[in-house]
Image 1 (cartoon, rainbow, N blue to C red):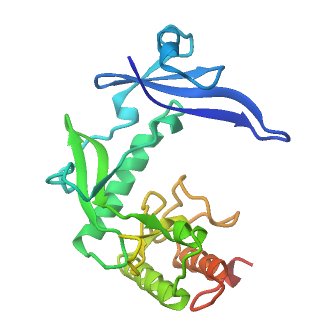
Image 2: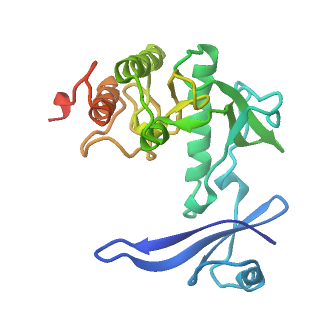
Length: 253
């Protein structure tokens, strides 16, 4: 077996305390999960992990959903300029959540690919192996809005926010609510590009539907996908960039 990925887990109540390292191993098309009480994990540890009592094989249906007939398949996922988004297997918790989230995002992206917009990430289709979706393909973007600000480079705040707002308006025209508008969910194709693009559709939902589990931004008590959720997120971006073009968070007050 080979090491696929790993992530340390901490008890964050009070002073952070190390709990275990969540290790993902793979052997061909098979994946295994283990909780190992040490860090870091080195190659020489793999043989011991293979006999660790916590090691469990991950059912494929828990991470890769079945392909659906009406979803787009990416014609050439390995070509330059393509980014393949795959489930983060260290987030596996013994259920089919990773698979469900991947399928939900693929369904949302299917709506987006039929009506592209310059301020919304260009979706290219699914990666399919053995009739299962193993990743989602997008045009590759180089840096986030957060990266650009941390670098201290200038951003035309008003124009940037107007373009992000245009991207959100387009998603809303498709009845899609993003639910997670943050600095690192806005990207640019190159370091010199000035066209912001909304990315990351795993928090998206159709207007009026329950919120997906994968979202971080919204206040407590928000339970459904509504356009005002994105107005709240855009308002947070206004504050980060030090200007205000549209939207407010008053409906959540």
